[in-house]
Image (tube, rainbow, N blue to C red; front, side):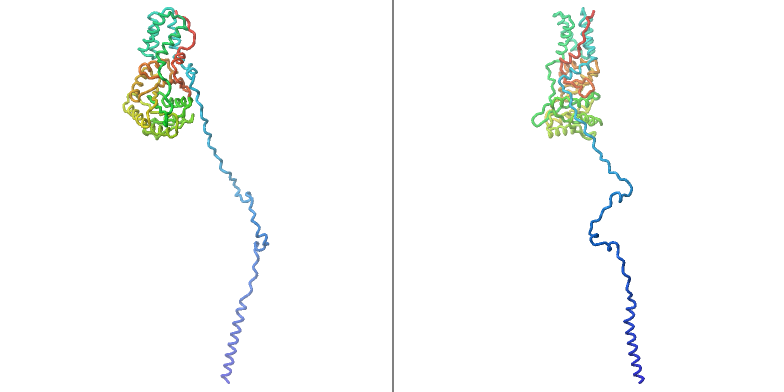
Length: 397
């Protein structure tokens, strides 16, 4: 009996524990409150599919006004200048020879128009010509011919005396010399012009003016800046070329001048220009090393072909010293023509005669001012006419 009671109690314990295990988990699982819907979930489905509306710029601005960067426009290229025609330049510039006119026109014609031409008068005429840098030999020849012609022809009027003097001066300038610039290209090769001269003669400026003369006559020109010793020379030449649309070939400062000259001619061949104009460094004629270097420039350039023209720039104010300069340069590079600068600033216009008589080299261009087109082709008759002027002269006692 006692054992039976224990079994019953054990079964009741098992049943109670099993029931508790089923009830307790359900008591722990309390239902969670419903999650509130968000604003996006509360919107209709059609509204969710609509494209987003961008806020206007003013609404998203930070409050700081941001301006777009300014557009910087490149400065316009300077217009290409058109040089003045070369024909008639000497006539237009005749007034620039006013100081020389005082010697030749008023001085010589005043002496020749005296009623009595004695030995003292002829000596005064000689002195005037020598003072004007005509040179001793040329002066004696001119005076001897004038004495003979005035004696034989009996010429006495001022007009007739002027014609006689003009004829003798033109004859002394030798009008038969070829004064044209050899600047026309050959087949596949441009004409090459080498510009040489001493320091201070205005060589680089004159080189720029020569380019304007060639362009005015219808040539296309390329400039070679072979003056590599003077820092501003290449810049100066490039400025002259840029004004008339001519390209300039240059090298670094202190580069080999011969190399720059060679490259300039090569560039001229590649671009098919008519004329290559090479500016060289100014040098003193008594500096052997510098003159040898000039000879090297000539030899290197001639690897492309012969140089067509070598122009020596002379300062008219140097007078007879210019003859020595011309002689040495001629020996080194075979000068073919002279460009006489600053002729408007001197009364010694006779240097033109002296240069040609001593060297047999024609004066091809004369500088009569500082303007870009004040370089004129030289014509003996027009030059003499400008020297003598047109003012009427009174008869001397």
